[in-house]
Amino acid sequence: MKGLSRIITFAKTKKQKMKNIKTIILTATIAAMAAFSSCTKDPCETKTCQNGGATQKVNADSCGCNCTYGYTGGSCETLNMAVLSGTFSGVDTVTTDNTNTKAYSFSVTPSGSTLKLSSFWRNLFVNDVNASVSGNTFTIASQDPDANGKTVTGNGTISFNASNKAVLHFSIYTVSATSGTKSYQGVFTQL
Image 1 (cartoon, rainbow, N blue to C red):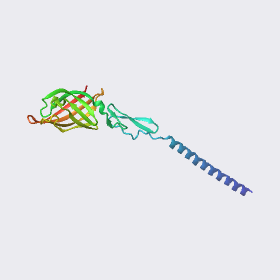
Image 2 (spheres, rainbow, N blue to C red):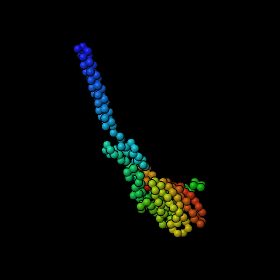
Image 3 (cartoon, rainbow, N blue to C red):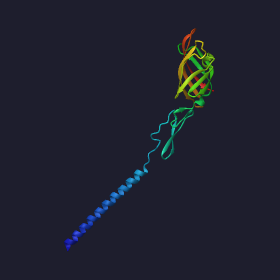
Image 4 (cartoon, one colour):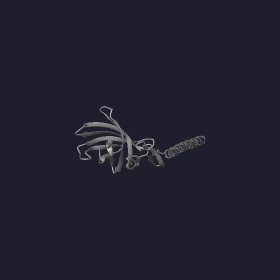
């Protein structure tokens, strides 16, 4: 009987050990599932906002951008052309000698992805000079706005200052039969 009692005790002990192992495995599985399901990925972790925009959590599953002044779009990728409308004032300088500087103003009227510059470049042009905009840059393709042999070409960048005024930085080249080719650099701020 003692032998049978030992076999039964051994079997009960083995059964209890197996039950303990199953309980440990089950507990570990539940804990792992709880830990895994409570870890949520930040939706803003991979979101990139352009032009100085900042990520902004919309809800637990999505992220948007809080765009800086002058920009729109899901990633702040689009320049809001309407905010460029108005008068700009500044100074340009002849880059070949840096001595001929002149202050003047001109008007900007956005139209689609084009800026119409009125009274541009020291009021030399009677008709509008057109600049095409792509992102934060603009290009003045070679043109003779007044059909008088005076051409202008150039390029520049668009930014915004702390007062939410547009700032145009540009380099332009003018060509005329009497004065030849001259290059200018200017910075003009929206009034």
